[in-house]
Image (cartoon, rainbow, N blue to C red; front, side, top):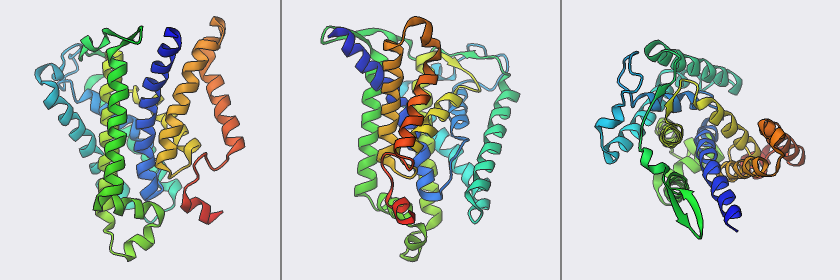
Length: 304
């Protein structure tokens, strides 16, 4: 029973990261039909915002000078600000182009962010001692679970509940949902395009910042490529869940986290280094079964 509970918490913790990352991508895709591949580099930028801009800052933590109640809003603001700035400077110029052009622009933007960080900090990973006491275990139903895992799961659930309330109970949320269903019709009904798109980018940036905070607390390392793997899995989750479907992205994120955790347990030790290959095989099988995703959005159904 204890081992099963440990696996459940591992799956929920990993799935929470993937779900938050996928939700950030799905928000942008729902409004602009843009797969923002710069999302992972936004995560890395938020992590390096905790360091003083010095190439010699091997273990100098800007976060160490701020309490958590100031650090968290600061990093969330960095993520939102960078994403909104990206929309204003880059993506706004490509609104009337095809999705492939915008996707290529997002690749280019990601490289710009990455090489900007490389210019400031070099490619050498930096050590960050952020809330290391959260790694201490707590006992839950006889199982010793790292406190960080519990906080990650609770944080993800709280964010999902707050975002659900925002999308369903506020005017801005209703406008975003309307734009995701039919952006042209929503504009004809009075929805302001710039406001909705900027809000979607701001929320996506804050989700990237939340993932960055969790990731750096888990690893204790700042690396300019640290958002790449999360971005890849998050993109896969949005495809499996159904491009444009927010519930689908969240569900698929938790599903991939569960599959990866179970594979780590059931595979023989010599096969565990190849765990990701088995995970991606499961992804292929899912897409063969449901090519349009598990939760096909209404807008996609109308096009079929």
